[in-house]
Every structure is written in C-alpha cells, then in structure tokens.
Amino acid sequence: MSLFEILCLANSRKHGGKCIAGLRTDGKGWIRPVKQDEPLSRRDCILEDGSEVEVLDVIKIELIGPQPEVHQPENWLIGSKPWKLVSRPASAAHHAILWPHIESGPTLLWNKGDRIHIKSFQEAPAQASLTLVAPTQVEWTITENIRGKRQTRAVFKLGGTNYDLVVTDPKWENYLKGFSEGNYSSKSIGLKPKQKFLLTISLGKPLHGYCYKLVASVLLLEDS
Image (tube, rainbow, N blue to C red; front, side):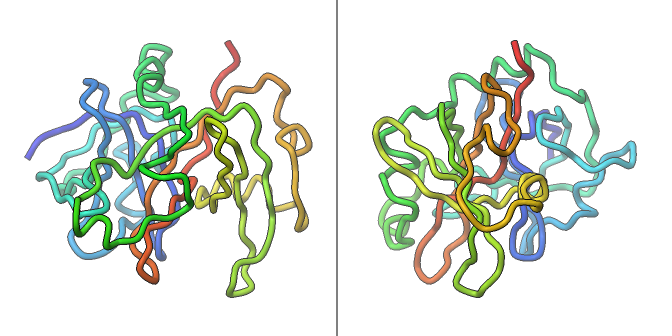
C-alpha cells in the first residue's frame, strides 16, 4: 500500500457513480483509482479538507495495488484513507507533465472510430485507456440518446480524422444545460477565441460488446 500524487484530469459520471483519473506527478503515467466491485461514490472523492476533488487538482491517494482489466490497464485499487489536497489549482510546473501525453491522431486510443470491440482486448489487452487531445476546433452537440435522455457530444478533428464522442463530464454538461438541442461552436457557448483547453478521453466499460470512447473531462487552462 502506497501514497501516490496525481494531477486529476478526469472527474466524470459512471453508472451511478464517478470515474476519477489522472497523471502521476512523478512522470510514470496514468492512474484510475477504482473500488473492487462498484464505481467510486461521491463520498470516496471527498478530500481531507471536506471539499470534493476537482479536475486540475493535485492530490495524494492511498492505493493498495494495480487492479487492471483487459480494457483499462491503469486501474488501481483504492485504500481506506481520505484523499489529500496538495494544490488547487495545479501549478505551471504540474501543467508541464500534460504535454507529453497529448495524442495528435489520426488514431485515438488504437483506432479511428468511437468504440472498440471487447473481443479485441481479450486477444490483446489494451496498453492504454486514457489519453489527452488538444483539438483546435470543437463543435458541441446537444441531442438525445436512444433512451430519450439529453446527451452532450464533442465533435472534433484529430490528425484529419473526425470524431464524435459522448461527454460524461457533469460540470461541462451543467455548463451547457441552458442550451437547447443543436450544434454549437466553442465561441457560441462563451469560450474565448484563444481559450486553451484539453479533452481527457477514456475508454468506458463494455456496453453491448463495445468499449466506447468518452470525453471524461473538458480541461480549461489558464491563458498564457
């Protein structure tokens, strides 16, 4: 059992719970804290100071050990100690660890589609299920899913490939809650023309035989 310091880059909804993930500040890659048989709850994500972990926080987490799945190799089992806030917001030095992890395309997490069949991982386990992208233009689509519920999607191009992915970042969904169904440019929803942002992309758990690529968090960065 060890303490790990991570820069939180995902805080998204997940089957009635939460999905948290981030990059280790020692430069050794991604960690997704998980529980044994259920998603993290909001209570699991409360820090020692009583606040809830936010994206771009630097936090310390007690982890028992790796708990990889064939589609999510970055999973680590959490311990019982409360998580500790190290820095809010993260410093410029912490932001520097982001840049080597940005994927430029044209593939995104192993292919050019929005999903990967779980059988692919049974034959060869995934080497990664988390990454960052920095598209220069993103269109935001408000629509309904097949169950008739409101859905937010991010449409962008990466290395010449078009992507259209579901957004599971609750803060971003809340930011767009006043917009009716339709397509919106980043400017039309209030982002500054030169606003820098990254998207954290995560592979979700299998659904109907596929692991879907999700925008787990929209990371708005301070203007330089």
